[in-house]
Amino acid sequence: MDQHANLSDAEVAIVRSGIDEIIGFCLRDTKLDAKYANLQTALRRFVAICWLLKSNEIRGSDDKPMSLEALSRQPQIKCTRCALSLMASEFGQKWGIHSRVQKRVSAKPNYAKAARFGWKKRRQNAA
Picture 1 (cartoon, rainbow, N blue to C red):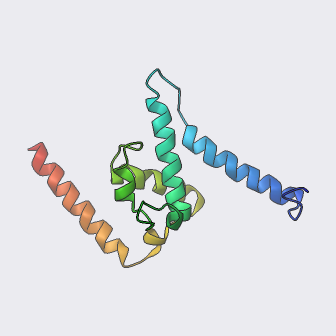
Picture 2 (tube, rainbow, N blue to C red):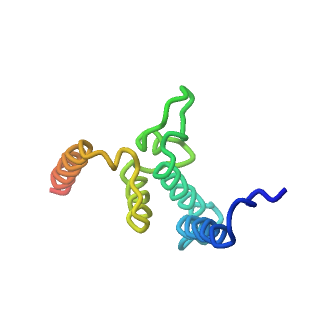
Picture 3 (cartoon, helix red, strand yellow):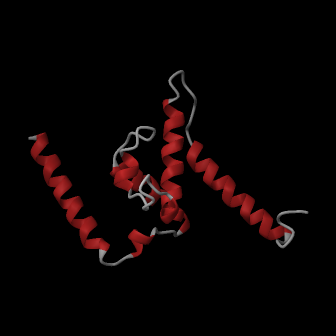
C-alpha cells in the first residue's frame, strides 16, 4: 500500500520541496574534505533544524529534552550554543518558524541580556 495515498499530488510535491529545502540548507557550500569537517557542518545544521522543529524529540540519556547548550557539548557536534542558535534562526527566519523557546515573550529579555553580556565580555577581551 502506498504510504502517502491520503495526500494529493500537490501535497506530495510540497513535502518533497520542504525536504529538498532542508537538505539544501544542510549541505549548502559543503565539499567533503579528507577530514570530513564540512560534513560536520552539515550535521550541525541538521541538528539545529531538528531542534527548531522538534525540540522535545531530541532527548539526552536522562530522557529529558536537550537544550541547545547540551547539544553543542556533544562530541559529534563540537560547536557553541550560539552557532547552533544562529543556524536554527537562519532557517527559521526564512520559513517563519520559531522554536518553543524562541516563541516565548519571556525568553526575549534573557536573550537580550545574554547578548549584552556577551558583547561586553568580547569588548573586554579585545582590549
